[in-house]
Image (tube, rainbow, N blue to C red; front, side, top):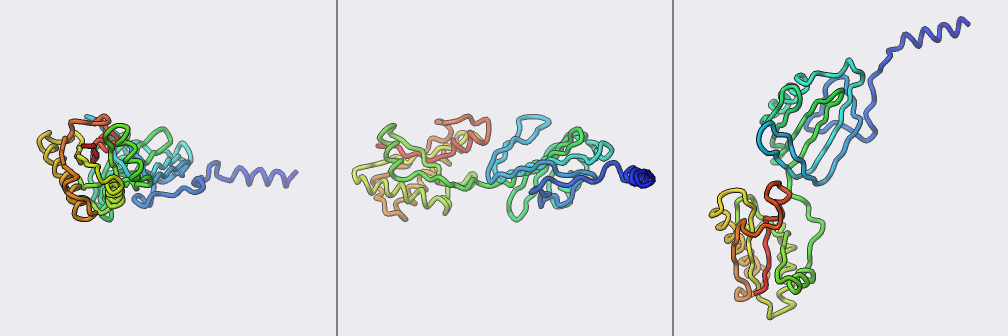
Length: 273
């Protein structure tokens, strides 16, 4: 009986709540290597490429694409749960300390900030809920293109509809210089033309609706001309077989209301003459 009594006393002397372990495989994000005290990670998610709509206290939400990380922190005990103001101010200070900018916040609820790390723009949103902190981070980047259309599929679309979109041709924002990573798509366009010596194409530049229409029309024309120049000077296509034309934002294939749609609208199309 005495031994049972001592064992019970020892159990009662143990803290009712101990620090909880993180979920297996989950860790803090390198941007925020420390966390609010008294919290553990109960869920985490990482995607190579995704789009996330960040909160906005006024106006439309901002969609950012890139490497996405989502971490859920849960208070070890109800007493460990921090106030919304404490959470928001901590993340605001952390972002500012590394040279970042606070984009928007609701002081007792959430905060959004951006910072450039190793030349890459990173967006972060910290949100406080009942007993939880949700942290979402997007490391802004272009999608790694795993699926590339080939000359055969281009040819099939041209036969079926008279035009085909080529999404593997890349430009920097507001620029008309064809980026090096466009080479695989350009090679396939050259193969398409080599397989059918009689084929002649309009190379048509499209943009999203961001900015003035006149500026986008000029940009679309300049991009179409740049693609023609790349095909003729680097890939051996006769200039007489290609004609550049820019239509800017006038022929969208998706809504320009979100970045996912705008990305689809920024494209080069081949149209059979």
